[in-house]
Length: 426
Image (tube, rainbow, N blue to C red):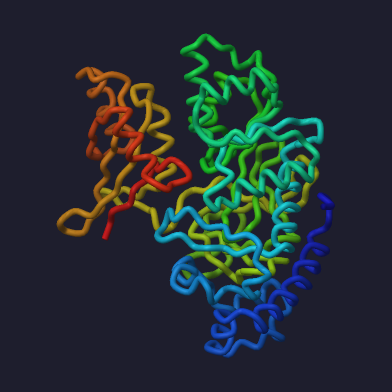
């Protein structure tokens, strides 16, 4: 991938691939054939990126209700079935062909290169490589293409992770940031100096490590204050089969323009300007099995279009501000779960947590925090409640639970990653 390609060249290449996508969908996609007919869309009139605005957006609900109608190939062409985690409702199956897997590999190879990955690196993968988890096979395939060493250890078990680090000397880890904190705590409990290990960098997945001004958030600060490693944030989704990954500058996840067109839309589906929050809406390029056209991810973020100090000229995405459907309106205050997570990560009195939202008897949002406290003293409880009141200006409901109870809430049967947010609103 040429990192300094001009904006005009990117646009020309994307528009050429967009033509190929529209032709593919009009021939092979039951869902999009129907959409084009229903809205009298002549695909030959869609010539430019701006022309995309003529096409209605597609949402998660469409995929959930009509999953099979998005399939553009016969079943015998599918060699991998991945699925979403089901964070916002029922999981969605994404079918991949051989070409799609090759594209996924290319995507993740580019991502690791962007995050300063080199063939001489050894990566310890602290995430699941089964349960239809697309990211797991993407990381593995991308690292193979890079030529780096791979340690497939899977999620959890801090003792085994650290023992493996000491034994096999990986230079990098791929992990959820909150789990890295658990490694740090385990090392501290057993007097292990992580700064004397071989690990120099971490690819952080699934959680924000930065604020929207690119400074490290509380989670990022806690990691780097205890462990002198370079953090790289990455954002992806199963549906788009593509990742936005930070370079060493840490100023947003870089778009891979040959793989996806990104729009950020306001409430009226108009493109927002740079540095303005909008809903990330993607059009996949080069996907064969289940391509998507103007698919609204539900994730709210901002984009930046000035060249990055690393030399790349591609558009960059800010950290995710929140998911549109997870917005909480609580006693006159608007909150997104990531802001709540930052707040709870900041508190020394809280070891771990789950945020639950439900509707009260008059249909208003209520927030219940399931907290694992540092201790069960009245003084600890007072500090937690006072801090929440001071920072939120409203008081959520708080319940204290044991580590065992928290484990059951965070890891119900069949989930792939810790549940930190439960939405019980009707």
